[in-house]
Image 1: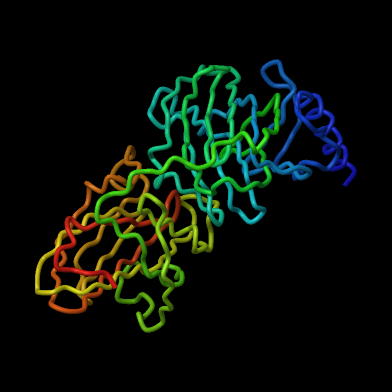
Image 2: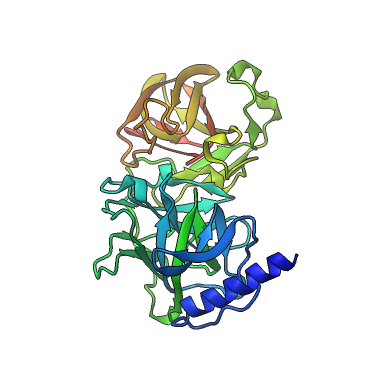
Amino acid sequence: MKKYFLLMWGLSICLAALASEGKFSFNSGNWATDEAKTKVERHLGQESLHLQRGHLLYNEAEMQDGILEVDIAPDPARGMAGLIFRHDGKNNYEEIYIRQGKSGQPDAVQYTPVFNGSSSWQLYAEHQARQVFKPGEWIHLKVVVQGAMAKVYLDHSDTPAMVIPNLRHGSKGGKFGLWTLSGAYFSNFKYTALDPASTPAQAIAPDVPPNAILKWKVSQTFLVKDARPEVWPSLNELKWETLPTDAQGLLNIAQYRSKQEAEHFEANTEDMVWVKLELNSDKAQAKQLYFEYSNKAHMYVNGQPLYFGDNSFRAKNNLFRGEIDKSLRTNAVFLPLKKGSNTILIAVTSKANGWGVMARFEDTQGISIK
C-alpha cells in the first residue's frame, strides 16, 4: 500500500509539472491508475509516464470542448497509443491514436468511437490518415475538439493530419485521458478548455447512399459457441427492437448491444445478433440489395439461406483489414422475393474491431419496407 501511495504522489508531482500550461493542477489521486500498469520514469530525455496497456483517465475534470496535447513514444511491438476524450464512465468515448508500426501507410493515424467498450475502426475507415513517424523520437499528438468536430495535428504542424467532421458521440462532455494497446511512454500532457459558445453549431452532414435502409429490427445478443447455424438459438426466442442507423445509413450494433468481452480484440468472445428487414413486394421478383457488414454475416430470405461472408480482420490474408465500404459497392445479392410479405434475416457476428451492417436497394420500385 505504501508503494502505491508513493507511486501516486510521484505521478501527481510529475504530471503537475508537465501540465503547467493547462487550466488545472494535478493532485494526488487525480489519475485513475495503479502500480500494476504505470511507472513514472525518464525516457528519451523527458520525464514521462509509461502505461503498460489500456486506459488512464483524469478523474478531477471533464471536457466538452478543448485542446489535448501529449508527446508519445509507443513501445515498438505494435506502436498503438493516443488520446481518449468525452468518456462517459460507462465505456463510451472517442479515441484518436497513432500506429507507429504503420508509419507511411494510409492507416498510420486512426479515429474510432467506442461504444460499450467495443472499438469500431473497421466501420470508420474514412477517418484514417497517412503519416511518417521517425523511430526513436517523441511524436507530438494534438487534438482540437469543438462541438461534434475534431482536428488532429502531429509533430507541431499547423496543418491537420486528419479532420473528423462528425464525432459519433456528438458534442456531449466527459472525461479524458490516455490509451495504449501494447505499452507507451507519455510526456508533456496538456489540456486547455475552449469556450463552447465559439464552437461549430452542427456536424457536417455525410452523404447518404440512395435507397439506404435507415432502420432495422435487432434481436438480443447471443454468444456463438458453435459455427453451425442449425444449432443457434431458435428464432422463437428472439425479442425485437427497431433501431435507427446513423446519418450515413450505418447501424453500429455495439452502440445498442454489449459484447460479453470487448477489450481483448481477437481474443474476445464471438457475439451475434439477428437483424431483420420486413417488406412487401407487389409481385414475385428478384431485387438487388447492396450491403456491408462486420465481422461475419449469414443471410436468409423467407427462411432460406442465401449468403455467408467473413470480413473479419485478416480473415482473407495478413493484409486484409475488413473495413466496410460505405459507398456500398462491394457486396450485392439478388433477393428472391415472393408476392406479398417477405422477411430478410441477417445473423451478424463479431469478435473485435467492428460490429455493424448497412444496406441499400438498387431501386425500390414495387416494394415497400414495413
